Image (cartoon, rainbow, N blue to C red; front, side, top):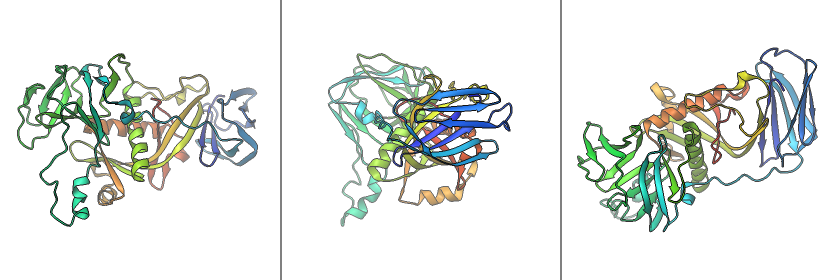
Length: 396
């Protein structure tokens, strides 16, 4: 199949959109498409390229409708499924991965250096939302009783936020020599003996690769971002994951978890410097993608993070995915829209290191560029799919 195909399946509606990509060599070549319950076959220029669909995906050929050819895209075709596809595996979230009374090792995701070794928590507790303290006045008829209190973990505690987790650094079994604190003023100190200035935003960086891992909240509390650290049981071993795949997976998990818990579908991606980098609108989380890149090498997109947008499981790849729309906000782009979302209580902020926000924006742009042109925009937003739990980069 010279041009390959892309199929977006919605579990909720049991429907599918099939896009047979145009051949880069001769986009005007006549194409004959045969659809059966478990396979697709494309004939073009005397060649025939059959492709078997993954197990569990069964089409209803008689429901095919809306056949059209779009310049630059190829053939578009909609159809129904004969039966629902297998349910999606639940994403393996941070809340599920951390359990009390078990030992864990924390690694720098970028270089694999050990950050915290053999740490056992007696309590693993979720934190309220980022702006919970701002809403207390709406709940209480008397002065804010929490005005002078802070939520900091005690010894052997781990607090989980939306995009981070907080640890108490006073009783670590392994002093993280791989870390050092670097404040905005250039001050350096060892992790075991903080010398912090009041109200100073101190970044925690990896000493080996200089990647930002989190921030110091107080003299004995560290906040690590979920996009920067890999957590493994002590008896396990470190398995490196390509940077872009890991970031996408963690962001997708955050979107899924928050949309389910808070019924919110619009998000602002903010950096640790307080700037808004991306506006994200979650469309759905029941998408199953089936893709074949065919024999065209022009469909492989190499990213700056070492990943190639192509299935690694054979001629046809299958992924569960989260579908989003996004708008970039760097260099004052979409400022009015960003300001409106900032003041909207229905929009939830997600905070990551500023460098990670830029990485995510680049991943979104590269992925959008690999989509068929007709699927790249919707009402001025750009289209993109994030993959939860499977660590795959997708061209759709």
